Structure formats: structure tokens, C-alpha cells
Image (cartoon, rainbow, N blue to C red):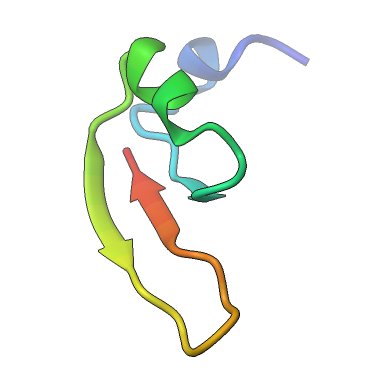
Length: 49
């Protein structure tokens, strides 16, 4: 299968939790667009493009 850009992919949605090193995605060039706080004992969720 050809790489994503060769198939017309322009954006990628990444969903992560606070315990999954969300900073790694930002270092790779993703921009954090949302943070969703969960209920008690639910990790914070990050969504990036």
C-alpha cells in the first residue's frame, strides 16, 4: 500500500490519554486540539491533528 500522502491523506486524528506520553505526538508535529477530562478514575484524553 502506498504511503498515506500518496493516497491523498491530509490529516490524521490521534487520540491519546495522559499516561500515554501525549507530548510525543506534539514533538512529531501534531497540534493538540482538545483535552477531555473524564469522570472519576478516568484518564484525561488528548485529541490532536
